[in-house]
Length: 407
Ligand code: SF4
Image 1 (cartoon, rainbow, N blue to C red):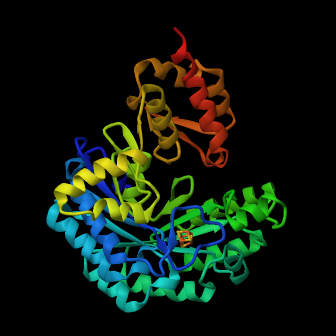
Image 2 (cartoon, helix red, strand yellow; image 1 turned 120 degrees about the horizontal axis):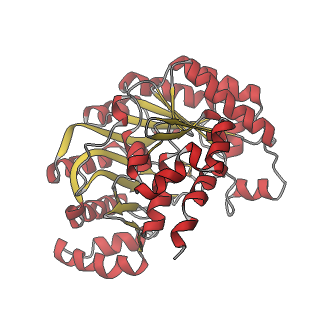
Image 3 (tube, helix red, strand yellow; image 1 turned 120 degrees about the vertical axis):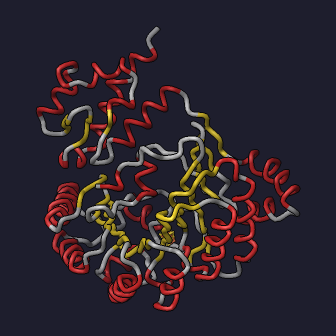
Protein backbone atom coordinates (compact mmCIF):
# COMPACT_ATOMS: atom_id res chain seq x y z
CA UNK A 1 0.00 0.00 0.00
CA UNK A 2 2.55 2.54 -1.15
CA UNK A 3 0.06 5.38 -1.24
CA UNK A 4 -1.05 4.81 2.34
CA UNK A 5 1.93 6.69 3.75
CA UNK A 6 1.26 10.39 3.69
CA UNK A 7 3.89 11.13 6.34
CA UNK A 8 5.90 13.32 3.96
CA UNK A 9 3.01 15.77 3.65
CA UNK A 10 3.83 19.47 3.72
CA UNK A 11 2.54 20.17 7.23
CA UNK A 12 2.78 23.94 6.99
CA UNK A 13 0.08 24.42 4.38
CA UNK A 14 -2.62 22.21 2.93
CA UNK A 15 -1.61 20.10 -0.07
CA UNK A 16 -5.17 18.87 -0.56
CA UNK A 17 -7.63 21.01 -2.45
CA UNK A 18 -11.34 20.24 -2.55
CA UNK A 19 -13.62 22.14 -4.95
CA UNK A 20 -17.38 21.90 -4.48
CA UNK A 21 -19.71 22.02 -7.49
CA UNK A 22 -23.16 22.29 -5.92
CA UNK A 23 -25.27 21.53 -8.99
CA UNK A 24 -27.22 18.40 -9.91
CA UNK A 25 -29.61 17.71 -12.76
CA UNK A 26 -32.20 16.57 -10.22
CA UNK A 27 -32.18 15.87 -6.50
CA UNK A 28 -31.95 12.18 -5.57
CA UNK A 29 -34.52 10.95 -3.04
CA UNK A 30 -31.97 10.07 -0.32
CA UNK A 31 -29.54 12.97 -0.69
CA UNK A 32 -28.87 15.51 2.02
CA UNK A 33 -25.65 16.95 0.53
CA UNK A 34 -25.75 20.59 -0.36
CA UNK A 35 -26.79 20.70 -4.01
CA UNK A 36 -29.28 22.66 -6.10
CA UNK A 37 -30.80 22.11 -9.56
CA UNK A 38 -28.48 23.20 -12.37
CA UNK A 39 -31.20 24.59 -14.57
CA UNK A 40 -31.15 28.40 -14.81
CA UNK A 41 -27.95 28.75 -12.73
CA UNK A 42 -25.10 31.07 -13.77
CA UNK A 43 -22.36 28.45 -13.74
CA UNK A 44 -19.75 30.76 -15.30
CA UNK A 45 -20.18 33.24 -12.45
CA UNK A 46 -19.87 30.43 -9.90
CA UNK A 47 -16.68 29.12 -11.53
CA UNK A 48 -15.23 32.66 -11.48
CA UNK A 49 -16.10 32.89 -7.79
CA UNK A 50 -14.28 29.60 -7.15
CA UNK A 51 -11.16 30.96 -8.81
CA UNK A 52 -11.32 34.09 -6.68
CA UNK A 53 -11.65 32.08 -3.50
CA UNK A 54 -8.60 30.01 -4.52
CA UNK A 55 -6.57 33.21 -4.82
CA UNK A 56 -7.90 34.67 -1.60
CA UNK A 57 -6.89 31.54 0.25
CA UNK A 58 -3.50 31.05 -1.36
CA UNK A 59 -1.82 31.54 2.02
CA UNK A 60 -3.40 28.28 3.19
CA UNK A 61 -2.54 26.22 0.09
CA UNK A 62 0.87 24.56 -0.24
CA UNK A 63 2.24 22.29 -2.94
CA UNK A 64 -0.81 20.46 -4.18
CA UNK A 65 -0.84 16.72 -3.86
CA UNK A 66 -4.48 16.14 -4.66
CA UNK A 67 -7.34 18.07 -6.23
CA UNK A 68 -10.78 16.61 -5.67
CA UNK A 69 -13.70 18.17 -7.55
CA UNK A 70 -16.82 16.90 -5.83
CA UNK A 71 -20.44 17.79 -5.53
CA UNK A 72 -23.21 17.82 -6.38
CA UNK A 73 -22.44 16.52 -9.82
CA UNK A 74 -19.29 18.19 -11.18
CA UNK A 75 -19.69 16.64 -14.62
CA UNK A 76 -23.15 18.29 -14.91
CA UNK A 77 -21.44 21.65 -15.56
CA UNK A 78 -19.42 20.29 -18.50
CA UNK A 79 -15.78 19.49 -19.04
CA UNK A 80 -14.73 22.99 -20.10
CA UNK A 81 -15.62 24.58 -16.77
CA UNK A 82 -13.89 21.75 -14.90
CA UNK A 83 -10.72 22.05 -16.95
CA UNK A 84 -10.70 25.82 -16.61
CA UNK A 85 -10.67 25.36 -12.82
CA UNK A 86 -7.79 22.89 -13.04
CA UNK A 87 -5.91 25.12 -15.43
CA UNK A 88 -6.38 28.06 -13.06
CA UNK A 89 -5.08 25.99 -10.15
CA UNK A 90 -2.06 24.89 -12.21
CA UNK A 91 -1.21 28.48 -13.17
CA UNK A 92 -1.47 29.81 -9.64
CA UNK A 93 -0.19 26.97 -7.48
CA UNK A 94 2.47 24.35 -7.59
CA UNK A 95 0.91 20.96 -8.34
CA UNK A 96 3.02 17.83 -7.93
CA UNK A 97 3.59 15.88 -11.12
CA UNK A 98 2.13 12.78 -9.45
CA UNK A 99 -0.87 14.60 -7.96
CA UNK A 100 -4.17 12.74 -7.80
CA UNK A 101 -6.76 14.77 -9.71
CA UNK A 102 -10.25 13.35 -9.15
CA UNK A 103 -13.59 14.39 -10.59
CA UNK A 104 -16.86 12.96 -9.30
CA UNK A 105 -19.34 11.94 -11.97
CA UNK A 106 -22.61 10.16 -12.34
CA UNK A 107 -23.69 7.99 -15.24
CA UNK A 108 -26.29 10.47 -16.53
CA UNK A 109 -23.77 13.23 -17.17
CA UNK A 110 -20.82 11.68 -19.02
CA UNK A 111 -20.10 10.59 -22.56
CA UNK A 112 -16.98 9.39 -24.36
CA UNK A 113 -15.83 12.78 -25.70
CA UNK A 114 -16.21 14.41 -22.28
CA UNK A 115 -14.16 11.68 -20.61
CA UNK A 116 -11.50 11.92 -23.29
CA UNK A 117 -11.26 15.70 -22.82
CA UNK A 118 -11.07 15.40 -19.03
CA UNK A 119 -8.34 12.74 -19.24
CA UNK A 120 -6.42 14.85 -21.77
CA UNK A 121 -6.76 17.91 -19.51
CA UNK A 122 -5.05 16.37 -16.50
CA UNK A 123 -7.85 14.57 -14.64
CA UNK A 124 -6.39 11.18 -13.70
CA UNK A 125 -9.10 9.68 -11.50
CA UNK A 126 -12.86 9.48 -11.84
CA UNK A 127 -15.30 8.61 -9.08
CA UNK A 128 -18.51 7.28 -10.58
CA UNK A 129 -21.74 7.20 -8.55
CA UNK A 130 -23.25 3.91 -9.73
CA UNK A 131 -24.97 3.00 -6.41
CA UNK A 132 -26.60 -0.21 -7.77
CA UNK A 133 -27.10 -2.06 -11.03
CA UNK A 134 -30.68 -3.06 -10.23
CA UNK A 135 -33.30 -0.82 -11.86
CA UNK A 136 -35.87 -1.00 -9.05
CA UNK A 137 -33.22 -0.12 -6.43
CA UNK A 138 -32.02 2.85 -8.50
CA UNK A 139 -35.63 3.99 -8.90
CA UNK A 140 -36.12 3.83 -5.11
CA UNK A 141 -33.06 6.07 -4.72
CA UNK A 142 -34.50 8.50 -7.27
CA UNK A 143 -31.41 8.23 -9.47
CA UNK A 144 -31.65 9.49 -13.03
CA UNK A 145 -29.86 6.47 -14.46
CA UNK A 146 -30.81 2.81 -14.69
CA UNK A 147 -28.58 -0.24 -14.48
CA UNK A 148 -27.82 -0.25 -18.16
CA UNK A 149 -26.80 3.43 -18.18
CA UNK A 150 -24.42 2.60 -15.35
CA UNK A 151 -22.93 -0.35 -17.27
CA UNK A 152 -22.34 1.83 -20.31
CA UNK A 153 -20.83 4.59 -18.16
CA UNK A 154 -18.46 2.17 -16.38
CA UNK A 155 -17.24 0.81 -19.70
CA UNK A 156 -16.62 4.31 -20.98
CA UNK A 157 -14.79 5.35 -17.83
CA UNK A 158 -12.64 2.21 -17.99
CA UNK A 159 -11.60 3.11 -21.53
CA UNK A 160 -10.32 6.56 -20.62
CA UNK A 161 -9.11 6.16 -17.02
CA UNK A 162 -6.93 3.46 -15.54
CA UNK A 163 -7.70 4.84 -12.08
CA UNK A 164 -11.33 5.17 -11.08
CA UNK A 165 -13.79 4.36 -8.35
CA UNK A 166 -17.27 2.90 -8.47
CA UNK A 167 -19.48 4.05 -5.59
CA UNK A 168 -22.21 1.71 -4.34
CA UNK A 169 -24.90 1.87 -1.67
CA UNK A 170 -26.46 -1.12 0.10
CA UNK A 171 -29.33 -1.65 2.56
CA UNK A 172 -31.69 -0.21 -0.05
CA UNK A 173 -35.49 -0.55 -0.11
CA UNK A 174 -36.35 -3.81 -1.84
CA UNK A 175 -32.74 -4.97 -1.92
CA UNK A 176 -31.92 -8.59 -1.07
CA UNK A 177 -28.59 -10.22 -0.29
CA UNK A 178 -28.88 -11.90 -3.70
CA UNK A 179 -29.45 -8.65 -5.61
CA UNK A 180 -26.55 -7.03 -3.72
CA UNK A 181 -24.36 -9.99 -4.65
CA UNK A 182 -25.36 -9.68 -8.30
CA UNK A 183 -24.34 -5.98 -8.32
CA UNK A 184 -21.02 -6.82 -6.61
CA UNK A 185 -20.31 -9.66 -9.05
CA UNK A 186 -20.90 -7.51 -12.07
CA UNK A 187 -18.82 -4.66 -10.71
CA UNK A 188 -15.95 -6.96 -9.76
CA UNK A 189 -15.97 -8.46 -13.26
CA UNK A 190 -15.01 -5.00 -14.57
CA UNK A 191 -12.23 -4.79 -11.94
CA UNK A 192 -12.47 -1.06 -11.13
CA UNK A 193 -9.34 -0.08 -9.15
CA UNK A 194 -11.44 1.28 -6.29
CA UNK A 195 -14.90 0.51 -4.87
CA UNK A 196 -16.80 2.39 -2.16
CA UNK A 197 -19.76 0.60 -0.55
CA UNK A 198 -21.77 2.69 1.89
CA UNK A 199 -24.77 1.59 3.91
CA UNK A 200 -27.80 3.79 3.17
CA UNK A 201 -28.43 6.26 5.97
CA UNK A 202 -32.07 7.41 6.02
CA UNK A 203 -31.73 11.18 6.43
CA UNK A 204 -34.50 13.28 7.94
CA UNK A 205 -35.85 15.83 5.48
CA UNK A 206 -35.18 13.70 2.38
CA UNK A 207 -38.16 11.98 0.68
CA UNK A 208 -36.67 8.50 1.01
CA UNK A 209 -35.37 9.07 4.53
CA UNK A 210 -38.80 10.25 5.70
CA UNK A 211 -40.50 7.30 3.98
CA UNK A 212 -38.17 4.82 5.71
CA UNK A 213 -38.32 6.49 9.12
CA UNK A 214 -42.11 6.65 9.03
CA UNK A 215 -42.39 3.00 7.95
CA UNK A 216 -43.73 3.77 4.46
CA UNK A 217 -40.66 2.21 2.80
CA UNK A 218 -39.10 -1.06 3.90
CA UNK A 219 -35.38 -1.54 4.15
CA UNK A 220 -33.61 -4.86 4.83
CA UNK A 221 -33.50 -6.08 8.44
CA UNK A 222 -30.43 -5.45 10.60
CA UNK A 223 -29.30 -9.06 10.18
CA UNK A 224 -29.61 -8.79 6.41
CA UNK A 225 -27.60 -5.56 6.42
CA UNK A 226 -24.86 -7.30 8.44
CA UNK A 227 -24.85 -10.12 5.85
CA UNK A 228 -24.59 -7.54 3.07
CA UNK A 229 -21.62 -5.87 4.73
CA UNK A 230 -19.88 -9.22 5.30
CA UNK A 231 -20.62 -10.25 1.73
CA UNK A 232 -18.97 -7.09 0.37
CA UNK A 233 -15.89 -7.60 2.58
CA UNK A 234 -15.48 -11.30 1.73
CA UNK A 235 -16.30 -10.93 -1.92
CA UNK A 236 -14.07 -7.91 -2.62
CA UNK A 237 -11.19 -9.23 -0.49
CA UNK A 238 -11.51 -12.45 -2.48
CA UNK A 239 -10.97 -10.39 -5.64
CA UNK A 240 -7.73 -8.86 -4.26
CA UNK A 241 -9.24 -5.60 -3.03
CA UNK A 242 -7.77 -4.28 0.21
CA UNK A 243 -10.47 -3.29 2.70
CA UNK A 244 -8.57 -0.12 3.61
CA UNK A 245 -11.39 1.76 5.31
CA UNK A 246 -14.76 0.71 6.72
CA UNK A 247 -16.57 1.45 3.44
CA UNK A 248 -13.70 1.57 0.95
CA UNK A 249 -11.83 -1.07 -1.02
CA UNK A 250 -8.92 -0.69 -3.42
CA UNK A 251 -6.65 -2.79 -5.56
CA UNK A 252 -3.03 -2.46 -4.33
CA UNK A 253 -1.75 1.11 -4.66
CA UNK A 254 -5.15 2.48 -5.72
CA UNK A 255 -6.31 3.84 -2.38
CA UNK A 256 -7.76 7.33 -2.71
CA UNK A 257 -5.21 9.92 -1.50
CA UNK A 258 -7.91 12.52 -0.91
CA UNK A 259 -9.75 10.16 1.44
CA UNK A 260 -6.58 8.94 3.16
CA UNK A 261 -5.60 12.50 3.95
CA UNK A 262 -8.99 13.07 5.55
CA UNK A 263 -8.76 9.94 7.72
CA UNK A 264 -5.19 10.71 8.67
CA UNK A 265 -6.41 14.13 9.77
CA UNK A 266 -4.35 15.96 7.18
CA UNK A 267 -5.07 19.55 6.25
CA UNK A 268 -7.27 20.44 3.29
CA UNK A 269 -8.73 23.59 1.80
CA UNK A 270 -12.32 23.39 0.56
CA UNK A 271 -13.36 25.95 -2.02
CA UNK A 272 -16.97 26.76 -2.90
CA UNK A 273 -20.41 27.01 -1.36
CA UNK A 274 -20.80 24.59 1.57
CA UNK A 275 -17.17 23.42 1.25
CA UNK A 276 -15.38 22.40 4.44
CA UNK A 277 -11.74 23.07 5.29
CA UNK A 278 -9.30 21.93 7.96
CA UNK A 279 -6.24 24.10 8.29
CA UNK A 280 -4.06 24.95 11.28
CA UNK A 281 -6.21 22.99 13.76
CA UNK A 282 -9.27 24.93 12.63
CA UNK A 283 -12.30 23.44 10.91
CA UNK A 284 -14.42 25.80 8.83
CA UNK A 285 -17.35 25.57 6.45
CA UNK A 286 -18.43 28.03 3.80
CA UNK A 287 -22.14 28.86 3.85
CA UNK A 288 -24.41 26.63 1.81
CA UNK A 289 -25.76 29.47 -0.26
CA UNK A 290 -24.64 29.57 -3.90
CA UNK A 291 -26.12 32.99 -4.69
CA UNK A 292 -24.62 34.59 -1.57
CA UNK A 293 -21.27 32.94 -2.24
CA UNK A 294 -21.19 34.18 -5.83
CA UNK A 295 -22.17 37.71 -4.81
CA UNK A 296 -19.54 37.88 -2.09
CA UNK A 297 -16.73 36.67 -4.33
CA UNK A 298 -17.65 38.44 -7.55
CA UNK A 299 -18.32 41.84 -6.12
CA UNK A 300 -15.31 43.49 -7.70
CA UNK A 301 -11.61 43.15 -8.20
CA UNK A 302 -9.65 40.79 -6.02
CA UNK A 303 -8.98 43.52 -3.46
CA UNK A 304 -12.61 44.24 -2.88
CA UNK A 305 -13.51 40.58 -3.13
CA UNK A 306 -11.09 40.01 -0.26
CA UNK A 307 -13.06 42.50 1.79
CA UNK A 308 -16.28 40.92 0.62
CA UNK A 309 -15.03 37.49 1.67
CA UNK A 310 -14.01 38.82 5.04
CA UNK A 311 -17.22 40.73 5.48
CA UNK A 312 -19.72 38.33 3.99
CA UNK A 313 -18.37 34.87 4.65
CA UNK A 314 -17.14 34.92 8.24
CA UNK A 315 -20.53 36.01 9.55
CA UNK A 316 -22.15 32.94 8.20
CA UNK A 317 -18.98 30.85 7.98
CA UNK A 318 -18.83 28.16 10.59
CA UNK A 319 -15.37 28.27 12.18
CA UNK A 320 -14.26 25.96 14.99
CA UNK A 321 -10.85 25.94 16.59
CA UNK A 322 -10.12 22.38 17.68
CA UNK A 323 -9.24 21.95 21.35
CA UNK A 324 -7.11 19.17 22.86
CA UNK A 325 -10.03 16.86 23.69
CA UNK A 326 -11.55 17.13 20.21
CA UNK A 327 -8.11 16.66 18.69
CA UNK A 328 -7.63 13.29 20.43
CA UNK A 329 -11.21 12.29 19.59
CA UNK A 330 -10.69 13.11 15.93
CA UNK A 331 -7.33 11.32 15.69
CA UNK A 332 -8.79 8.13 17.21
CA UNK A 333 -12.12 8.31 15.39
CA UNK A 334 -10.64 8.93 11.95
CA UNK A 335 -7.60 6.63 12.15
CA UNK A 336 -9.59 3.66 13.46
CA UNK A 337 -11.80 3.79 10.36
CA UNK A 338 -8.79 2.67 8.33
CA UNK A 339 -7.08 -0.69 8.11
CA UNK A 340 -3.76 1.06 8.84
CA UNK A 341 -5.30 2.01 12.19
CA UNK A 342 -3.95 4.29 14.85
CA UNK A 343 -0.24 4.74 15.44
CA UNK A 344 0.19 5.21 19.18
CA UNK A 345 2.98 7.67 18.38
CA UNK A 346 0.27 10.15 17.46
CA UNK A 347 -1.00 10.19 21.02
CA UNK A 348 0.50 11.64 24.13
CA UNK A 349 2.33 9.02 26.26
CA UNK A 350 -0.28 9.23 29.03
CA UNK A 351 -2.73 7.53 26.67
CA UNK A 352 -0.45 4.66 25.70
CA UNK A 353 -0.90 2.67 28.88
CA UNK A 354 -4.65 2.97 28.63
CA UNK A 355 -4.57 1.60 25.13
CA UNK A 356 -2.32 -1.37 25.77
CA UNK A 357 -4.25 -4.58 25.99
CA UNK A 358 -3.09 -5.50 29.45
CA UNK A 359 -3.73 -2.03 30.82
CA UNK A 360 -7.45 -1.84 30.35
CA UNK A 361 -10.25 -4.36 30.74
CA UNK A 362 -12.18 -2.55 27.97
CA UNK A 363 -9.31 -3.02 25.55
CA UNK A 364 -8.52 -6.56 26.73
CA UNK A 365 -12.18 -7.53 26.16
CA UNK A 366 -12.17 -6.04 22.68
CA UNK A 367 -9.01 -7.97 21.78
CA UNK A 368 -10.54 -11.12 23.25
CA UNK A 369 -13.72 -10.65 21.21
CA UNK A 370 -11.70 -10.19 18.03
CA UNK A 371 -12.81 -6.57 17.51
CA UNK A 372 -9.38 -4.92 17.60
CA UNK A 373 -5.75 -5.96 17.22
CA UNK A 374 -2.31 -4.57 18.02
CA UNK A 375 0.50 -4.74 15.51
CA UNK A 376 3.66 -3.11 16.85
CA UNK A 377 2.65 0.39 17.83
CA UNK A 378 -0.53 0.26 15.77
CA UNK A 379 -4.04 -0.40 16.98
CA UNK A 380 -6.63 -1.25 14.33
CA UNK A 381 -10.12 -2.70 14.00
CA UNK A 382 -10.59 -6.20 12.61
CA UNK A 383 -13.28 -6.75 9.94
CA UNK A 384 -15.60 -7.75 12.80
CA UNK A 385 -14.64 -4.54 14.63
CA UNK A 386 -15.34 -2.49 11.51
CA UNK A 387 -18.82 -3.97 11.38
CA UNK A 388 -19.40 -2.61 14.90
CA UNK A 389 -17.16 0.40 14.37
CA UNK A 390 -19.38 2.96 16.03
CA UNK A 391 -19.64 1.10 19.32
CA UNK A 392 -15.99 0.03 19.30
CA UNK A 393 -14.58 3.47 18.50
CA UNK A 394 -16.88 5.25 20.94
CA UNK A 395 -15.90 2.68 23.61
CA UNK A 396 -12.21 3.40 23.02
CA UNK A 397 -12.68 7.17 23.04
CA UNK A 398 -14.77 7.04 26.24
CA UNK A 399 -12.11 4.94 27.87
CA UNK A 400 -9.39 7.38 26.82
CA UNK A 401 -10.96 10.73 27.44
CA UNK A 402 -12.94 11.00 30.68
CA UNK A 403 -9.80 11.13 32.83
CA UNK A 404 -8.67 14.20 30.87
CA UNK A 405 -11.36 16.29 32.47
CA UNK A 406 -10.38 15.19 35.99
CA UNK A 407 -8.43 17.83 37.97
S1 SF4 B 1 -26.32 13.23 -7.77
FE1 SF4 B 1 -25.28 13.02 -5.79
S2 SF4 B 1 -25.19 15.10 -4.91
FE2 SF4 B 1 -26.68 15.13 -6.61
S3 SF4 B 1 -28.67 14.84 -5.64
FE3 SF4 B 1 -27.92 12.80 -6.28
S4 SF4 B 1 -26.79 11.98 -4.51
FE4 SF4 B 1 -27.09 14.20 -4.17
